[in-house]
Length: 543
Image (cartoon, rainbow, N blue to C red):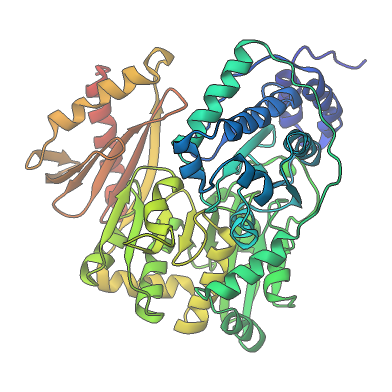
């Protein structure tokens, strides 16, 4: 007897509990997505609005957000128009909007709803179909489009849908834009608005991969000829795990097909084989197996998230997270390719790049978490242009490249590193650490009572800034350390006299406190974590 589901959330629980057995229940999720008109609070986080498909990410709510965007366009608020890089609504209508999606359930159907809403008010649209986030950014610039709407929740689990908005520079939307979308959409939600569907007329397709190839060829940050020659001529194996995401097929289009490149998990699967589709160490077993079975001189494996904006590397000798790869990218682009400028990193990122920047006299910019905070250093008009921008959560971009993080860029750059240095990534990293020092980053956290979430948690944790000022002595395990620097751009980061550090930062969306730490030896990591947790519990009055 079929089970009656009261909510999409209940249905998703069964689907995610056994993806292979219960994927047929997606038809029930679709029914909820189409019929559920319950309002939802719209919040654009660091990478857009996200919600569970059928629960709050519904056809009605997607139409409301799309309608709110059109209202924002029509309002022509000067701060919004400036942030978007357009003159007025007429400019938006003529320059147009690119709309597409990743490989999520109902992606094409949601996209058609958005296109219909835009076309109803005379806005030119292009339909990209399935595409990755960096392709939208490159496509905006190549087409001189006004903006893009990318229906993706990035690396979130299979039950999520998402809505990314990028203005005319291709970067993530800033608060000038997202706060307006939130305000208008939530006003409509408060009135329990039912937004009528408006079927699109002529749907003009656009090949964003073709535009992306032209984009990176023109920008010349990457040397595609050198990359292709390396693959053709050297004894190498490259393994790309697409985790069933929208990145599938892209690399073949960029550098051509080769027997030396193998691809994992390229099949259609809305449920990602039942795993969380993120570039985590746990998800890299397939890559490691392929590389370890090979006798090739050069080995490279990468895993990409569904919308192609996050990447993690391995060469079978070592998994190389972005904390390390970002630092390697700075060294490579500066020393081997001669790029000059600054380096920008999020505050929770390894200080290996600080050591490299200091010794090579490269100015360092440390920002809040969120790739949008790199815009001042990535824009073509920036006075201080970044050689590389990266964050510890697997996102990277480089000089004269997209303002969005780009996993394809991360893969191509890794191949060029091997081609130029003649080394596998772990050997190149070891050489860098021999010269600039060894750093061992990690992250963790603790849950707190829901009553503390939000402003109360921020307020209580701010006590750390008063309790641990520069010069304060701190016991870490059996060692004594002195606070050398206190950084408060996002949470509280204490840098110690030996170069180790810890950062305590409240989650912006959950009742959690996140710890980011870095030790100077692998054995000291546990002690730094314990110190971060002790400090946090004291600040929250939990001891």
